[in-house]
Length: 125
Image 1 (tube, rainbow, N blue to C red):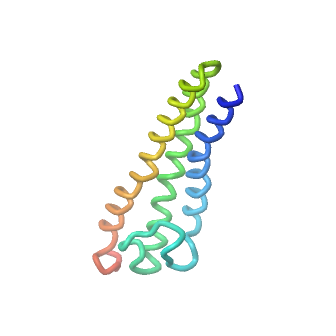
Image 2: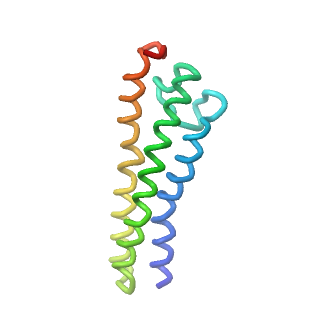
Image 3: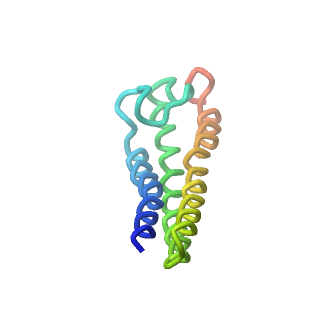
């Protein structure tokens, strides 16, 4: 049971992180454009307006995906209560891998939205 609790906590870290950062980024992007923290692509870093737009847009995606992943994660982890360590570990690892898809995949719709709303120099269309 101890390993199951550990895996549940580990599997819930990513959805809670997406919810937390998503809520934060929807309201306020990092104050300065930087290469360390925040949504950093060449298009998002063109100017302050693209920087804030990208954070708000990606933040919404992360927030929704995090909220969606939370109950799904709990349900699948409940299905392996009492199973052996290998089963719990395998299911937990698969869940984590699946959770990474929207985290990384959020780049594509955010970049598309940036290009629809801004030209290549970062000026709003």
